[in-house]
Length: 235
Image 1: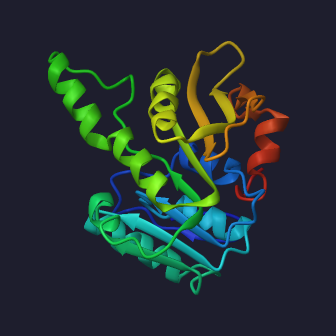
Image 2 (image 1 turned 90 degrees about the horizontal axis):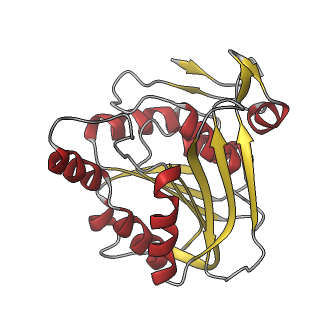
């Protein structure tokens, strides 16, 4: 059980445990358009959808999860939250979900499963295949293009080294960056992640900034505290 300030999350049945990436995306995703409908693609434990239920007044927050154990766990986590009437989880793959889209969404979020740069075997071809199989970026972007409302925002977190690839693919679907935040674990560390907010409107002078998580072990930066203090118990 992982206890947050306003809700708790069980994760014993999920392969993908709660990590910094999910909390960051949930806390960071822009809600300047006051989203009425939100979709979380690949919800896992449901953490991102739960954070967005706390942050917004959205009437409908849908989550999508293909893994049966994770789907059941996310459903339980939603039902046990203060926002059970607004959260709903679909047990389906992305391809299945977009076959007959019924709704458009003002905010789409995804922490897509990817094999991180740390994941390596001796077989380069197999590594590449497994990386691509995790959730091809093109499938994700195509789905966002199909499901995003006219003024909607699509927010993801990806490895920093994939940022350029992701944005180039998005541009092919006439989806453009609205805001980018690059994440480092410590001041001297390399940039590991990119938080990307994307919309249908081409913004020429969009914001790009950097977020450092901690200056020493468990000594968090004011920026990170400000972003996560409404959720983490000990912030």
